[in-house]
Structures are given as structure tokens and as C-alpha cells.
Image: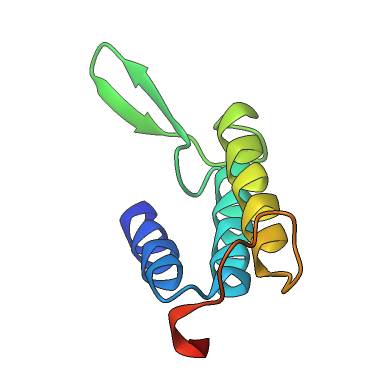
Length: 90
């Protein structure tokens, strides 16, 4: 599931659809904070999936949330990170 989310984020970034990329980053933050992705524990017998709120820790969901914020700011037409119009508007 993680690779699907990253593929969606990457595809939207390539197409300069920053709002959609931000939505996917929020989905990743929610899934990570619920333990659906990145929620595992390494034991001597191997990795074991641990579902539950906060089971992936809080650093990974925070990074996804930061990415969502950056992408959302980029989506604003007169945003602070906007330097050139998207290729579709040239």
C-alpha cells in the first residue's frame, strides 16, 4: 500500500497537481498514524504487523503531514513556492 501511495504522490507531482498530491500525503499520514502502513515491530522471529493508533510512532505521520503542507502551499496560485506557471498553462 505504501508504494501505491508514493506512486500516486509522484504521478501528481510530475503533472504539477500539487493539491492532489497533498491529499495523497494526508491519506498516507492517516494510514501511517493508524498503523495500516509502517506499523510493524521487529521480533527475533521476524517482523510482525501491529495495527493500532500510533503503532508506527509519530515521526513518520508527521513527515507525511509536513509533505502535505508543502504540497498544499505549492498548490496556491500565488503561493510562496510558486516560481513558474505549470507546463499546462504555458
